Length: 275
Ligand SMILES: [Zn+2]
Image 1: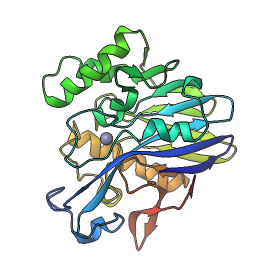
Image 2: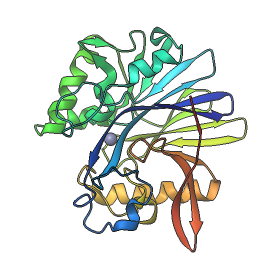
Image 3: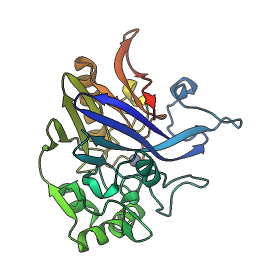
């Protein structure tokens, strides 16, 4: 499924690459029933977990933010994934026209969709990462590192990758912003255009309960303390500036505001139009 958001000169398409159902118990020790209030549930009481990615276009230039999980093996059992390419096709946007794929980080659920059946999904795009990501993942030996290496190798061998080392504007008003903690080179993406402000959060936060509890880190956070500090800072900036927050692992479409409610800082889901 795909949703559409007006971001000034740009249209932002929120694309669901996949989802799975899981038991909310065991996700985080301190999470209670109310912390799952935004998640749809099935008849067994399981909550729906999502993998989101994004297309940004002004009608002339088009970029992607993250590529979803694709057909990477190793995801949760019963998962549906790899929906992104057909979602882009159904928008009538040629994949050949995508000039850049900017990645928040190198976890496989964000880079796995860069290729399918051995072919790159966006054949003319530069694939952009923070240099600190590859510096970290290229030599690791755990499952996440091995998955990153396997997915990155063809992109590197075919000379499709650019590394950035600081905040970098990729389109006018669209900027990759350093937001380290979840991973060592994690990026968020700021879109400031015609009076609108939007932040695509990558995995700066994986769950809405972190708006209230920024220090509730998850096992997937590489540096728990730094991830918590970064989340707290980012959410405070979003709250104060009224910026729209977009998060790929929040319940789809994962678009909302960070607001104060009864003296708590909370996530307030929005309702962008379905395409
Ligand atoms: Zn993720």
